[in-house]
Every structure is written in C-alpha cells, then in structure tokens.
Image (tube, rainbow, N blue to C red):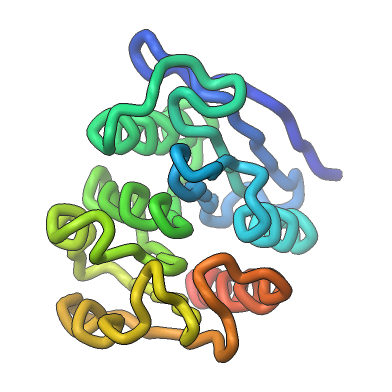
Length: 212
C-alpha cells in the first residue's frame, strides 16, 4: 500500500506547496528531499529531471518529497535570491523529521536546487548525505560550495556537454569536497538532460541504495 499526497509546509509566513510520498511497507528507509532548479528560469517541482527522479523513487517505494520554492506554483511569497530558499529547504527537512517522523534524510538537488538544497547538509545529523545534479558552481559563486562542504557521502552527477554548470570546471570544483564522494558523468547530456532523465534517476536510485 502506498500513500501520495499534496501538502503545504509552513515556513514562518510562507506556505510551500509540496508532494509527499510514503510507502507503508518501507517506513524506516531514508526519505529523499528533492529540490528543483532556478525559479526565475522556469524551474519548479514538475521539472523533467525532478519528475524523473521523483517517479523513479515512487516506483521503487522510496519515501520522498518534492516542493516548490517560495513564489513558485502555489507556494506563497517571492523569490529572495537564495537566503529565503535555503530556509525553505530547512523547513521541509524539519517537517519530514518532526511531522513525518523520518529518522534519516538524503537531499537531492538539481541545478539551483543542488546549490541551495545541498547547502543545508549540515542542518541536522539526520541528513546522511546528498546528491547534486549539475551543481552550478560558477552561477552561484563560492558561498554555496562552501556551505555544501561536508564529510557525509556525496554524489555529483554531471553532463559532459553542460555549459551552464560548466563541465570544463567540474573537476576543479569536485576536488574541493571532502571524501566520501563520487561522481557520475552522463556522456552526451547538457544542463537540461532531455532524453537522459532515466539515466539520471537510475544514478540517484543506485546511490540511495548504498544507504539501505
């Protein structure tokens, strides 16, 4: 038996639109929090990469939550340039731990969602790792690279045709991070992963299975 529901998560005066899935047969597994790409470039929780990951996790009975940042879809408020969005991620983490009673959590962010989402990795010890899909290091600057530094397990997924999250500079940024870490290069994929969604979702699911 499975449960999927549309919910709203409170972050002070903001309400965040979200979709939450929990498998009744898999209550003690880590939950995955999925963060979408940049709102000002059309990013939302129904993005092709986010949906590919979300649907893959549901298909395999993995607890997960995707949400819209403030000012996106039915989420209230306005885009804040990162500070408010990081607090949105933390509000979702607190919701999953305090309201849904999850004992462990893995962050999965795509593009801007990787920069913002993975920067919450040290918010609580119950976060056990993260997956960053096309972390846009040059676009967001060093702040979020520093905030996402951690000794927890990390997976970086990168397309070798990506010019937004520059593939040419990927190794330099990847080398910044502490172990444990690993990388998966998607040959032929640019920043948007059209026709590569399933491959990305498979890499996410394989990494998730290392925790269970």
